[in-house]
Length: 339
Ligand SMILES: [Zn+2]
Image 1 (cartoon, rainbow, N blue to C red):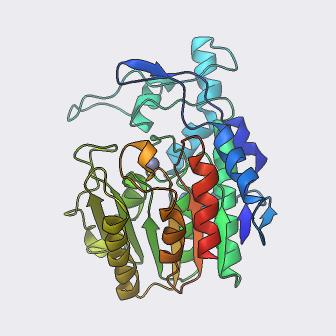
Image 2 (image 1 turned 60 degrees about the vertical axis):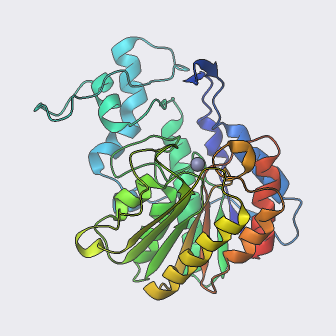
């Protein structure tokens, strides 16, 4: 298995705690995640680890709005200039526009933090180069598959599937999975995305909502009671040319492997009916029982790896997964069984 990863991911390593459930918790999406995965992968046989070349920033426009990219690139410097914050300060939104109230596009960085984010994630001094490095891994993996490899894995972090065309959130800044898919679609491929992270791939859905050349499928915990709450329901099927090309399969909290396997079978059937020529898998392993949404166990991840073998060339992009011991066990188990 070809593995792409870039050390610049470490430039984005949030340290400030998040308030969750009434208490302050340390951040879950840290640089240690990718290092833990990589160290576990190097113990597998037939793993070929490579550092991707820099991403062509014009490719980011396949997925994101130019104003948003300019914001991400400059936000931390501008925030420091506006506030006097130190270099290791973490810029977080504290104001958002009132819905339905007319206003002009904001120019102040504090207002733009609220405009371009949809939760409480920070922008750090190194967020932009780290996000670029994650995108580079995804594009390199797509390029390898486009060039004839059966499969490639992008160990991208920060993750991407909650990033919309002009929003960051859910630990995601650039949508690596959407970028891999859009990059392949731009080269004429009919692409399906299968998101198996435990949370709805809301950013990916938003990117392709009006497109009929990329099928987006997400299997996730019921958004009525789980992040990202505002989307992920079965009635969301896409619009315009994309009508029917978005499939959400929400599962009840605590669903175990038999329920999950049925959802996977439905998803792979939809990939086949769509006539996809290449598959992009958004691989989150926060489906593990210890993450409290769905209830897969260590024994289920090899089965997941086998179930993802659709017969199509496949790009696998890392999304979520956090628990101590879970990343190290589940990611290698999926990739080994897939290969
Ligand atoms: Zn997730």
